[in-house]
Image 1: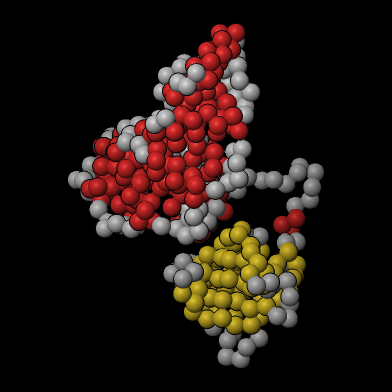
Image 2 (image 1 turned 180 degrees about the horizontal axis):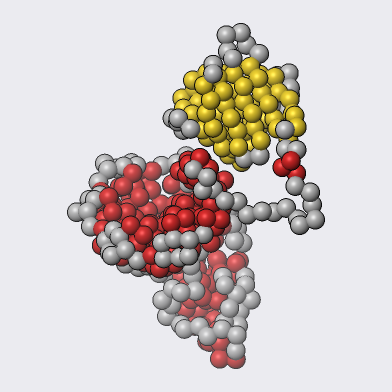
Length: 420
């Protein structure tokens, strides 16, 4: 669940200094005031001490509930927020989202909108049994107005996507900006994207780059790629390959195939780095392995130009196995179709009716409906899916186009393995 459970940072009347004699003294003072009927002390005793188990008190949800209920009954509406939290998470009580909702509604704008935020999350996630985006956006907006910046980010998403509201990029931008200024990385990335694409604001590459950098420095992976690519291409700034490398390397460290692709271009072309065809080839291949289609296409192009260089992994004392490579051959067994597919290592060739194209293996083998399959990208916007290929009598090939979106032809094949 994404519900909030923030209690210790509430602006309690009684300060807490945990783990020492002074804290224990504070606990005793608060407890004494609570027992004397002070409603704010009762609130602090429950939320500040018993729920977190700090300040000289043991964690005790039952005691927390008791004192929070006493405080709420005396008109301290903020006490309803931690009571709602107890029921949302099942702390010391049976989990009961319906009851939690009742308490959050009574809490209203408590803790700078956290009660409203939890209401929104309850409806968005369907914790009452059914998702309700209309109620979710209602309470995200209330939470945002009360000061909850995560709620601002969520409201931005609702207006950007047009979920339960009329799509409005200007409103989305306003909510995202609210969260971005509070250092929310995803919202900073969104602001960069809005400036980049001119959504709700005038297109401005310089501002886009500024926000992408903020988001990247805060850990947003897509922004690492975007900032690096803009420095690489000189968009919103002068070309700066050193800065491009810095951000793209951060993206690569975080597993971004898009960053791998862009960083590969620096090494292949020697832009701000020593030209390194091996490193560039490996990065393109890595992006392809992660499913980035442009990386696969570039690997194929480099191979066709003789520019693809793979690092040798063969031990020095091991014979060169390339003298007798193992090949998988698939031949059509359907009348009227003269087609052969030969797969060896990362490379493959598909020949049909005297027309031949080159293909590259995509290492994303999968099994669907018990049919083992693997995929290849080829020249001329062709893609090949070799299905059920471990069953030599029941295999077939699907010829695709438009990035595997359109099937051109499917036919049965016999498969065998041969030595070159």
